Length: 175
Image 1 (tube, rainbow, N blue to C red):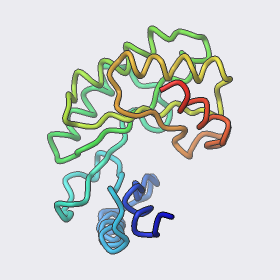
Image 2: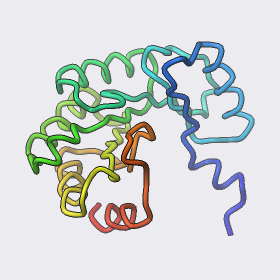
Image 3: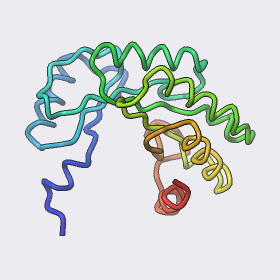
């Protein structure tokens, strides 16, 4: 059975509130280091940060709506990596997914992937609560084709809600 320390090593300790300050991010980093989390996830405007070497730094791009132009998401991701980010969590255009324009979703993800090639980790937030099963599968397949490293359920900011066990199972089966 995993210990609390084992579980902590899987957690992205996150602070994405619009009112977050640099002092809040410094406190987040101290707490993450104390808890032994895998990473901290912050808005790109909060970079650079002073963090222990073992703590990964993740940022969001296209957050929270995903409605940014792909070129803007790519530039935002690239600038964040230049400022010290190890990982990028991008939000897809959920409207494109709802319209089943999976080629557009794939191109969006591919643009960010091209801007932040490996070893930078690219995670794709799909807002699973806003999608039906076919749409979840379609965007997960698009993420794989575009070279994403992970898919994630939600931003936590969408009014449709967050993760469900059903969505996670479907995502896992797909990727």
